[in-house]
Length: 167
Ligand SMILES: [Zn+2]
Image (cartoon, rainbow, N blue to C red; front, side, top):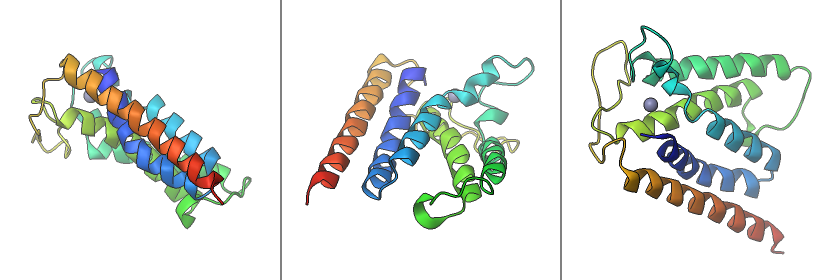
């Protein structure tokens, strides 16, 4: 899947989460989560640029998602003692950080699993999963997912803001 398709899948995933964060009173977290997930939407494809690492190998796995989640959790563990803010869902900041990092990578894998090359979720165990919906370079799917993502994201923000404005 290309960048546009990945951003589309990320926005489709973010839409309900953004709605939930906005309607429960966490606009800062909503912005933080959306920004982080969109910023990291192409992170697993760094494997194109690392010599010796196969494409859709180690960086396209649940293990990698866990490592990125752990890095976020680690960063959060430094922030948590000095910055006490209410975290959505009532979880700790560390748990929230893990979910954010894990989720950002996982949404990329969702974009790739619909293509025939599939995703090796359990790397290093060699098995590819694929839904065989479209080839990665399909203009229709890349633009379609992007369009749907923008629509869903805009819709969730509008609905959330209108809902908040109602008495
Ligand atoms: Zn990829």
